[in-house]
Amino acid sequence: MAIATNTRTTYSAVGIREDLSNIIYNISPMDTPFMSSVGKGSCDNTLFEWQTDELTAAAANQKLEGDNNMNALAVSEPRRLTNYAQISYKAVQTSGTAEAVDFAGRKSSQAYQLAKRAKEIKRDMEKMLLSEDLKVAGDATTARKSAAVMSWLGTTSTSTSNIVDGSASPVVGIVNNGGSSPAVGPDGTTVASPSGSDVVLTMAMINLAMERCFTNGGEPTDLMCDASLKQKISSLGGSVIADLRKEAPGAAPATAVNAIDVLVTDFGTLKIVPSRLCLSNQLYFFDYDFWSIDYLRPFQTETLAKTGDSIKQLMIAEYGLRAKNGLANAAVIGVKDA
Image (cartoon, rainbow, N blue to C red; front, top):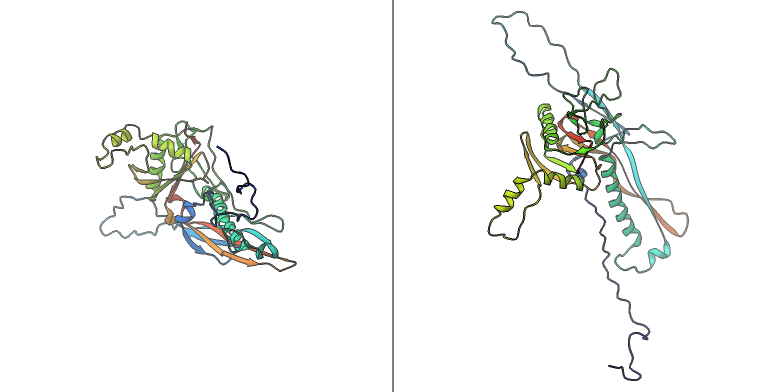
């Protein structure tokens, strides 16, 4: 096979129009399950406050007929808690020329980059909220920090704490006294740590965390964890999953059930939510009604002063986490998949 003399081919041709798709494909994960599930609120200061309270323990409460000795009970005052609003931003600067030229896949280079930065900030927020960050007031050289989820969990007693230490033997709750004296519980200033090395997750640990939530009055709906622990939870199903696979309806003969996405425990039903941004050795049990992200400044774009032939803008938000009552939630820490 040969090409005839003087046949013009694309290999030597000049002026062929470039074929560049007008779509930009981005595979980066952008899901933020915690932020997407909790409520949104507002605050009017960098330091915002709220109060929590609880009822006294239930008792038989049997009184004498005609009793005239009705002394008032000791008053338990609500607990006052605080957190700080932190600032997160990303800047975008584009030259006048770069904004004027015709780019494939976007009408405005500046607008495209700003949209990317907004998504990145949301991921940054999710990562912070699911971390062990403690609140920091900040000053002229130190940025303010908002206390994250783990700093609001726990109690002053191992027998009631809603942080389950998987590394302990036997498995118990972990004390989180907070920063006050006398100790009254978590306040965004301290985080409980496992007592030993990570151990393999068991169903007993999950059940204990749910029992603590139930006892405290919480009703978690979601169990959130990373990918490896999600797989471990599915493996805990064992023969249950095998039975489900065997009994798969005839309408879907090619379907094999090999995962647990909903877990029914003695103390409630949980949806298993995998997260790319939570810590690798922890499970979170969330009752979302008891969390909110409070904004001093919601997401907004600010155009900075023009100092040359360029456009400079900020995508910025100022926000903090409000833990309305940490006792409604729980965590299992110090665990691994294998």
